[in-house]
Figure 1 (cartoon, rainbow, N blue to C red):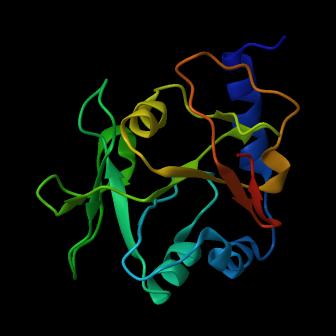
Figure 2: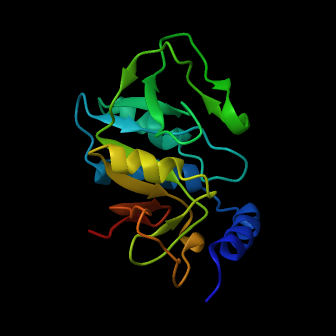
Figure 3: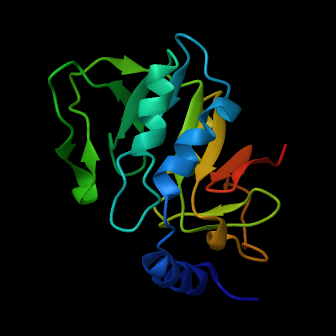
Length: 180
């Protein structure tokens, strides 16, 4: 069986080659499948490098009355914290160069966490960068985890350990697929 680190390297290389015409618009069209409701809080993210970019999806969620919060690294072995972005403010490069909110912005607990990934499998296991931030966050929150990615990021199987959290669903350009 391929190790996580080998799979991570291969998935990172593959993702960097994925160019799906109309991807952002396709994700946004599938927004209603996520259960948009007024006041519902979605934990989004700012795409980093070749990650699937959810920006158009986040706009659609807000247009539907939902709120969007962004993750911030609070510490090396801590869960992510989610913060609303005040009007006229911008995310700033933070840990690892990823754009994130400032610590003093309003902190919230999301109902749904949109999760970036390197790969996923048919059972809802995901492969991230290996820092464990999303696994710790999902373990700490009572939130639905929805992976955001390209359909071509699906692999046959992802090795997993007891601390790895599975996704409830994956949203790709092809639509929402639920796992549990």
